[in-house]
Length: 231
Image 1: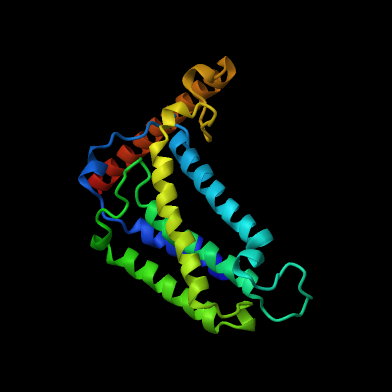
Image 2: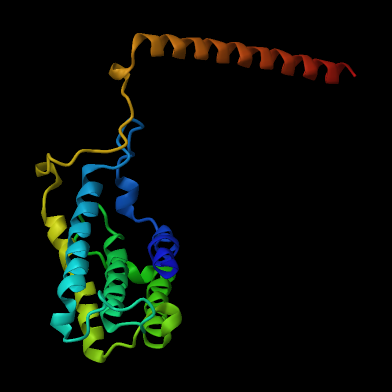
């Protein structure tokens, strides 16, 4: 759980926060202060990738042992050794998050998610480093990490599902956000027309009080300057 937390929060934030600005970013208009915190495009990306990942995880959980012809880990005893079944689920989840970091580089419907990826060495280092540590955890982690070594075929299937995140990201980008009327924006602040008369009156009183305090502070400041000049 700690490793998953590091991948999804710490490492992903560090990798994406170091993306250099582009010309298209500078040409984009700023967001208004009354705009919602989570837009329809963000909701589309969040729900779209959640559907893909949950479908894969639940499929592996309930029928994964039949697909890979291995023992099921659902009914294993409490202190049993790590199972290949749950290791595949864990490895597949990490691979999906790893490739979804590449999708997260472009969040405004851009097609080429690899554009300028090599201009950010920190991003490349984090992605490759995470993949290398994941190999060590799965193949050599053993009981401390509750992992069982996987075969080459099982690794290829985990990578195949992870790469599917890139394909699924293109499918999500194809869906126009304007047609998703069912998605509601979240974090929308109250507009001017949504404020009551009492709130407006309270706001005016706060503004008047702030102006009086500002003027009082200016008077005291000028008095202090005059005293210094006199001395």
